[in-house]
Image (cartoon, rainbow, N blue to C red):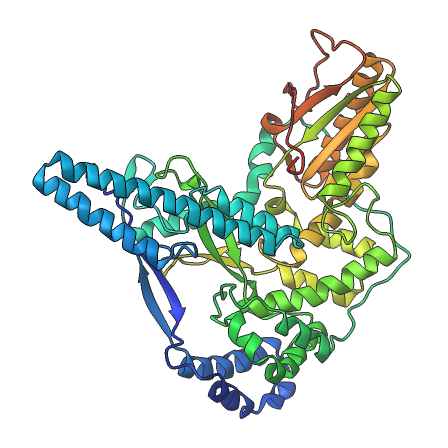
Length: 531
């Protein structure tokens, strides 16, 4: 087709720090009349005042510029390695020109020496890095994953298949990535006509006696958040880089706090904070397929700072009033993958020690976070005692959300996102936990454990027939609960497993079926929460 497979240089937009002077930048910021923000009644107007004043000064001291990068920087690649690499390349050119066996042998010797030096440099670098972050599990595993050298790229593919046509036009490519990214949560509605017509249960939770209202955010809390910002994180579509908000934290903490509290008073958030920049990240497969990439969403930095404060208020309320089910471990303080896995393993081992049979269903949901119905979620918050002002705030939070695909200096047009919790947000995981919290009530005689969208349903007993019957009954009830939440079961990825150390497994175990009649696959092993 004449399509080039050679990767073009990566084009990024960065702030130039060539002439940046931190002291001059802070002096200019301190000269702004930030108190004027308190006189603005509209949260959108107040935000625009802040953004305009901040960006005017930031653009003066650190203007945006386009950068072309052909090779990614590797911290282990030393100047000595670079020199050896250049020497190897020179020898290769000489060997090709002379067609001499001696020159080719010399090239091979240097090439082998270079390969060994690269391996040694990598090993030394990662050994030191793992040792330095041994007390931080997240950084440790991030380091381990980076050692796997899996190919992921945020560059656009050079071509994309659109129906029967292959296009190399980058504008068309970026626009056609945005559609599947923005409609990922519509799987349930697309599949509903093929489902068995059975009534879904009520999704309303029991009315909570505890009431919740937002409290004023304090300047000290915002200042701490700003000072803890990761300066290496990317800016959102507003171009407010975390680095510069971090540097100016003591100056801008007060007007930012006023902006946050104005949002509570007006039950609105700035429209800019509802716009996400989505970066397509290659995940493998056919590079011509629009589904070859997964979306990474970047929200404005101050939106995440604000959501962090909101999230703290609502999670403190939930935990103090024991709102979350004891069978839910996702995104909760004192809980995690380890505690969830140990709980499930302990239950299964205890059953096996009693010489009982045990069976489990590992439930997979299709695009669960993207499929959250906003009306159902608001109804759940209402039943949990959230005030009318809070409900109005969350209604505004979900309304008019849009996303743009951003890559290599290009920006697609906007597409509306009408479902799901915002990807990349601080509130999203907590709100999803609220959304599915009452699913555990449908487990019946079986045990269940929830961790985000990973659900395991399991039961045990002295008789395999009893185990199969109870688990199928519970599985049916759980499916109805998910259906009531408009979450779609992914039958092909939902698996079942038998655990029975002392008794022989049946040659033909009973079938577990979904409500639409699909049989689940039995497996001998399953990766649960990374284990």
